[in-house]
Length: 205
Image (tube, rainbow, N blue to C red; front, top):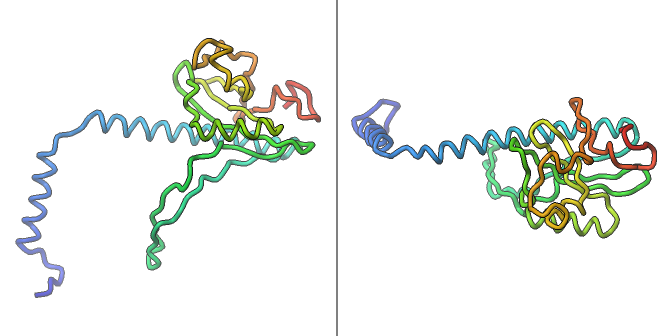
């Protein structure tokens, strides 16, 4: 017999079983803590990227560079044409976050990483990201890693990041190690501050 919207005994029993199962399932506090931490890190990372994008728009307005966020490759695996909803997955390993062109024609490509700790480790970049940066660096592109360590901002040249172990004797950097690569922040990250692009000198960007 068709149910016309009335709650039956079987409906009540099913809901009761679900409630009992949920009640009997132990709470994984470590999993909940990790999920919260991941959400917090994602939110902070997205905020940092917006601050870099503000710098990109500033440089574009000045005619210094045109740089944009690299879209993450995403493949749709199924779609509900009635509701417009879809599911999908990232189709390849992530590429470096930002790329574009400097005044004069030189390419620029860099990754963006933020940490609330007092140090940032080399392995926050994936092997794929490092391989791509190395290939473009060899061809003459300006490559690096734009980072935020707590409240300080830096643009690390690719060769410095790549050779971190040889240069600093370890696989992580602290703010005091890289003071020479520190850049200004005024709502926008001035990531080109210490780089000569051909139309401005150090400190003017």
